[in-house]
Image 1 (tube, rainbow, N blue to C red):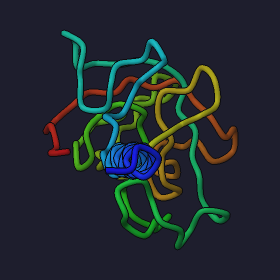
Image 2 (tube, helix red, strand yellow):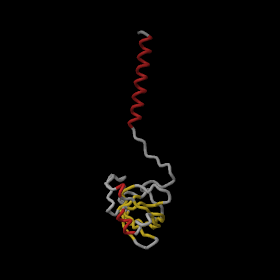
Image 3 (cartoon, rainbow, N blue to C red):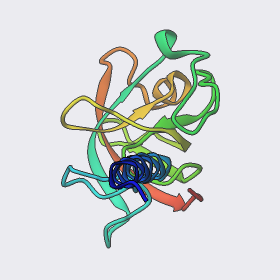
Length: 147
């Protein structure tokens, strides 16, 4: 048996094996990593009540896809929240005028610091937030949605 031929075959098979293993590693899916200190989507603290600043989003996002795949409709009672599971129903109460609205979480956000929820235009109108654009609210989970 020719030693040179044997070494060439060994190198070839080693290279093929390395490429195959590299290919297989690329086929796997990594688990999502959460780097912020915020709770992961779907996790709740002991208290289901939250307080903070609410804002709303409307025209620019109307008819665009939401994080759960639905088409955003600014005339429906929906909202975006960073961590609550999709389809969770929450009661949002304005701490400035005591108005309330029930919305369903179908999107992720808000992404502006200090805000706890982004409401649809319809929900913001019902709470009286349109003129100011934001308002202090309390959020109460009514029904926890599925992922």
